Amino acid sequence: MMKPAQVVKALAALAQPTRLAIYRLLVARGPEGVTAGDIAAKLKAAPATLSFHFRTLSHAGLVESRQEGRFVYYTANFAVMNSMVAYLTENCCGGNPDACKPK
Image (cartoon, rainbow, N blue to C red):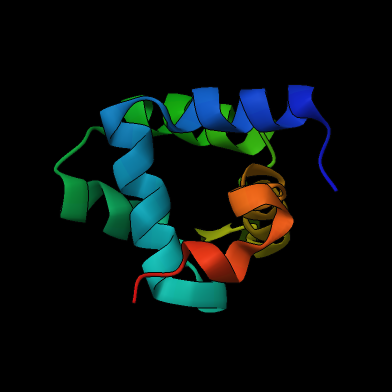
């Protein structure tokens, strides 16, 4: 389970439109990841700007990177994402999360 300070750091990292868009793109792509160049093209963002955002997301534990040849691939850290969601919903509906599901 994540500690409150970790959750706050992750939420703060996502509380910016470009970083949220990056993260959603990475989540959609899954564990294979996306190259920095593909993200830049998709979001129409400058590489220097993206580097700043990747660093912020990485420091929050939300994003991981790997080098393959001359390309850097970024992936969402699904374990951290799932831990954050679990933390946020831990006491959902008085400890009965099934009661919160839409009918």
